[in-house]
Image (cartoon, rainbow, N blue to C red; front, side, top):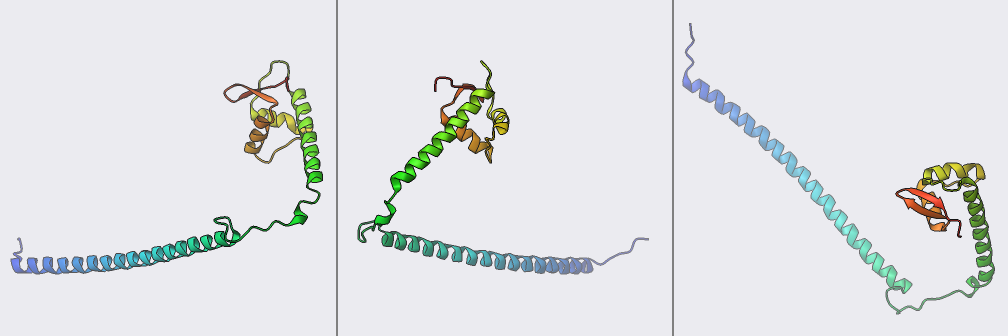
Length: 161
């Protein structure tokens, strides 16, 4: 009960299917070529913009006189008035802050106790000393000179300072 299918009919169907597949692939290739062209145009615009920005930066450098001395720099005399007083106030505020930090650190450390920065931050909160981020606290505490690094991540109060 097998049905005999002529070979020519099979080959015609196969050829037709191959043509359809070929057509689909060509459409897909055209689509991707268009996308590539769009991306190349975007890259070209970005390069033009970068070049424009580079030229503009060089122009402003020349105008500001940072690159060469074609245009002399102008210093305004009114900026220098009272600078000494401002510096003294800044130093006084800084020293008051440092003194408060030193007193607070001395009160939170027991005799031979070592703490990490996070524990120090938590213990300083009741003293009214807080930082917005861990990095700021770490930077200020380690650069203040009031702490001595004992082992990895652990610090002790520097009583000599």
